[in-house]
Length: 390
Image (cartoon, rainbow, N blue to C red; front, side, top):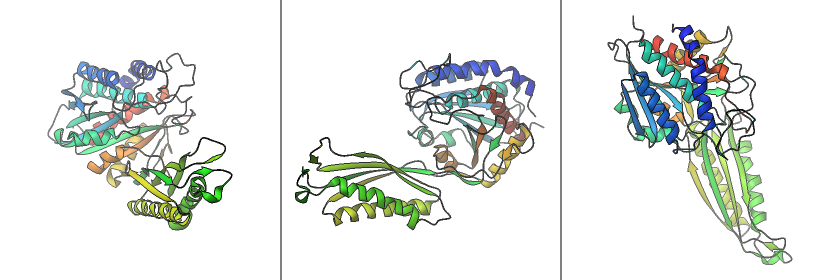
C-alpha cells in the first residue's frame, strides 16, 4: 500500500495547484498555460520522459519503477480543459477569465494526477512503467481521440488505461463504476426546414416552416417511446429552435438543433435512421423540404470487465469504509471522450465522490479539495497493486 502519510502531506500543495488552475481556466485545445505548468512540474518531479504537443496540446509524462521486469505499462489520464461558463461563486480563487470556468472539476483531475506523479516519481515502488496522459479538449473537442491519432498509445506502449471523474452527490471517499456501458454515446443533429415564407395574415399562401418544425419536434419523441426497446436507454432532445424575427411574417426557413444519447451501437444506428426518416417524411407531407446534418460524437464509455473489477478492488482499498464502492451504478446519459481511450486499450473509468456540491457544469460548482488525497491514493494504489515491486 502507498504511504498515506506522504500523500496526506502533499494535500496543501496539490490544493494550491488546483486552485491556480481554477483561477486560470482555458478552453478546449487552448490550454497552453495549464499544459506548460503540467510539463514543468513533471520535469521537476524527475519523470523519465516529458513530452508535449501530443494531440496538439496534450502532455505525457513517463515514470519507470525501480524494476521493469514485468514489462507492464499502464496509462492514467486526466483532462485539463474548462467550460465556457460564467462563474457564480465568491471564492477567493474564482475564475479570473470572463466567460470561462472550471465547472466540471478538470482542475481537480489534473492536480490529483500531478500529485500522483510526484509521489510515484519519489517512491518508484512498482515494477513497470506509468504513462501519465494529460489531455486537452474533453469538453466537446475530442482531445482523447487527438492524442490517440497522434500515436500516444503505441508510442509509449500503453497496455491498459484508467480514468477518473468527480461526481457531485457521491460522498467524498466513495467511488462508483460498472462494467460495460457507463456513459452514453453523444451525437448531434442540425435540421434545416425550407418552406414558403409570406404574410402571416395569408397562411394559405405559405408553407409554414414553424408548423412543420413543431410537428417534427413532437414526432422525434416517438423514437424513444415507440421505436427503442423500453428496456434500453436513449435520449432525443431538441435544444434549439430558430425561425423568424417578425410578428407578421411566416418565415421561409427554420432550424432545429439537438442531441441524441444512446448506450448501444444498435440503438445508436436506429436513432440516426429514424430521425432522418421522420424529418424528411414530415417535411414532405407539408410540402416543405428538410435536410439533416447528423454528426456522431463521443462513443459509449464502455468499461472492460476485468479492469473494472480490478479498479473496484483498488477503490475499496482507499474508500472511506464498507459499502463506499458501488459496482452497479446506473449508466449516465452524459458523455465522456475517455471512451476513445477505452476503444484503443482495455481499462476502466471510475466516478469519485465530490460530496454535496453543485452539479457538474453549474456556475456555482467547485471541486472539493477534501477529495484530493482520495484521488491521489487511488492512482498510487492502482499502480503499486497492478505492478508490485516484490
